[in-house]
Picture 1: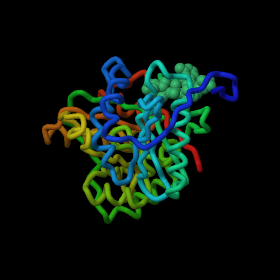
Picture 2 (picture 1 turned 30 degrees about the vertical axis):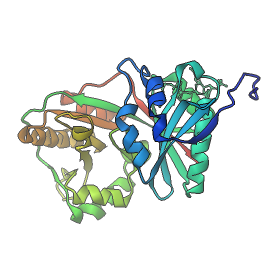
Picture 3 (picture 1 turned 120 degrees about the vertical axis):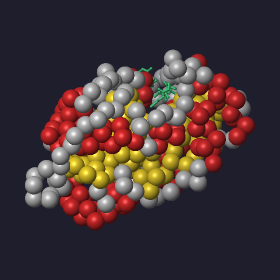
Length: 300
Ligand SMILES: CC(C)(COP(=O)(O)OP(=O)(O)OC[C@H]1O[C@@H](n2cnc3c(N)ncnc32)[C@H](O)[C@@H]1OP(=O)(O)O)[C@@H](O)C(=O)NCCC(=O)NCCS
């Protein structure tokens, strides 16, 4: 079969994954990266998700590619785990599976589909752009290996009573705009709408900065401990960071000290790659990697 550009394309059939695809999929994911792949870790969970599906491309009855889609909230979906077996790459497999995912998303009323790729993955960056996804924000995963005792002055855990003020703060925030209004749990980005914000506040996972002296909210850090259970580490992560350099510094002092007192050793500082935020984390000893994570979206 010939593609529009004259290249030979594979006559793959795309269908939902079966449990029995497991061995073939694990086999071609074995060497995705130097350390292996996370697909075997999430496979069972993905196949059981009520709000998600795994699609596979099949050639002569054998799986040669996969991709996962989850519908996170009405109108919004997330793509992850795109894999094509090494010997079948550049033959349209990922494009065919993504098209199926988008078709499914559309049938479920999804209006926007997002995904993330690392900046040092030219194949993925080129593939998603060819499929019409546009880059919307750049994130970075900074890491603090060891927490310590620190003093903050104007930061505290927020609660549900702060919802209105925090939401108002976000509406005129430059960091919120640069983050395309997204926050992350693990490597999955979601829109930070008022409902999700309320959940962070109610669960005691939001730190606010009130350094202006008039009680106004002037900075925000959202955190989550999913990394502890999913990555089996004595760690937590930031999901969203917002504020001027001084504000983020003070909230970082608060968080680092809190973790130290709780015996949490490590903090994954996920943040939008925006200088006032990353500079404040660097000042606290967070290490900045070379690569960033680019979030893309496509409207259906
Ligand atoms: C990224 C990946 C899924 C792409 O799968 P694929 O089946 O080879 O993709 P397609 O054949 O549908 O490619 C579509 C387009 O993407 C671009 N592309 C894909 N791989 C590319 C590469 N290595 N270099 C440059 N462009 C590339 C091309 O424009 C290609 O169209 P073309 O071949 O007609 O020029 C595959 O390389 C892979 O499994 N990589 C390892 C895992 C990974 O990085 N997953 C993505 C994580 S976000």
